[in-house]
Length: 56
Image (cartoon, rainbow, N blue to C red):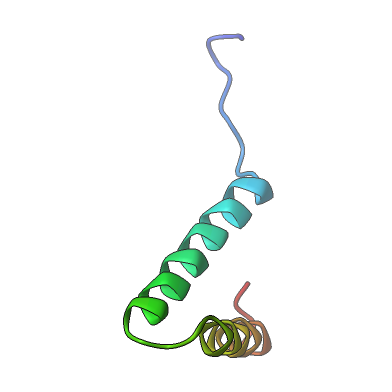
């Protein structure tokens, strides 16, 4: 690679970061006593709310 190469922001990297964050939240809800189904519903609500607020 040339010395002046600067990596650009990658949507895949951001997507991977969001997936990891969502997984950590999901595991925290499981550890707190929610069932997997409840944790998935909470995660779905969280993602839906963030998308409707314009965050992605």
